[in-house]
Length: 314
Image 1 (cartoon, rainbow, N blue to C red):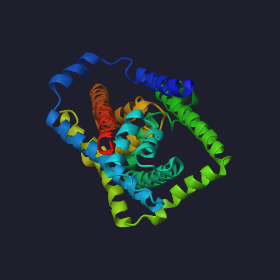
Image 2: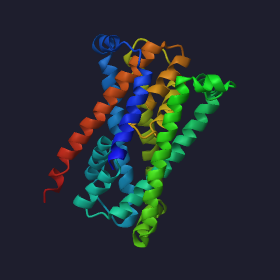
Image 3: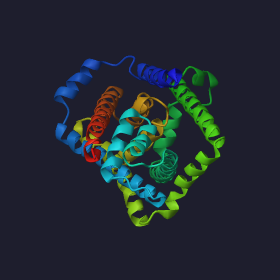
């Protein structure tokens, strides 16, 4: 348990160190205080809130076929808490405490949601790659994943960053395998999870479910895209550039670090440079945007934790 807590922090810290090892943080502070359009930043944060709200409402839909009808506000607040904690279990535990929803069945619905989101981001990725294929090819070449020289590969800093990201994902999958193996030994528990997974078949309003899914990912994208207008050096970047970086950042946060810290910065900086933004400005953008968006997640988690008891005090 200690390693599972420490390793993501160490991995994220190592990648951040390499990405920002020669960075001038005083310039980032100047941009934060004097070069940031806060109206655009606040506007982008609205979509970050709505993305989690829509996710809470969609989650409630997958619980209804299991004869579980938690309050919408409980589902949303549980999403706020779980994202702030970077865990899935708190979301489930909240409903078990306040709405008598089965832990195992709730876990199954979370698995269902993850599958739907995976298919959605793969679809978005496919479309983005088709629209911006040269950019992705250049990115792979510059990050050391398509170079002929083995010596160049082994001396590339980007190669080691990607290698450590890969190791982190492998460690995550290893723990997931152990967890799934434990569940397989408990037949009743697994059956309840399967029932939760199959809850998608019983969703009563499929068009609304699809709308929530599209709304979630649209809000995620706009949450990122509108931050371009916060800085003079990114305001000229178009929506296709934002889509490319959004896809890259989405896959980067799969690496088990706190809120994607490190891998997300690496992906955004690398891709932003392909569109002509210099490395310093790209680093400032990644540092400020990730920091503010993470702060929003923490604030929403605190709000969810404080707000949950009130509608359930009886």
